[in-house]
Length: 203
Image (cartoon, rainbow, N blue to C red; front, side):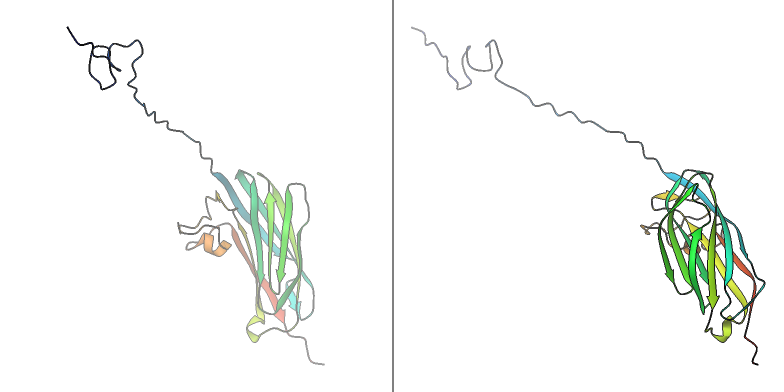
């Protein structure tokens, strides 16, 4: 008498995984998917076009006005850019603001002695004039004579400027205009050195 073997010990004609209607052996198939993401880098070609003052000669405690024209040559809006202005030691910047708000919006302003900085958004194609009011009271001897007014505009974080993007790959945020333009310089900076500071005549 033959022995009918039907068990789950993986033997016999009717054992699991052999001639059953549904195979109990299963295989996991791993499907690898690759997601392709488009990375868009904003490019803003920022430029200081002019840097002028309303006086050729300056006396102590006399208020002088500088007007600086900046432009975003595009192709992207510059959202989170920075505009900077620095004067010779001994000057105090009382105010700095755009003369129009049609295509530029100010986020914050910092005035510290002879240095000023504005965080701003400037649209593609926008030209904006910034007005700086300043005066000198107590100045070092080195300031008498030529007065230097330096304007600079810097790209936003995460964007590039064809003329002013630092080659330092370890930097996570843009530096000053001088740092971004180093070492050759660029059109993001303009210096006004045509003013002359005179000491008040002693009566």
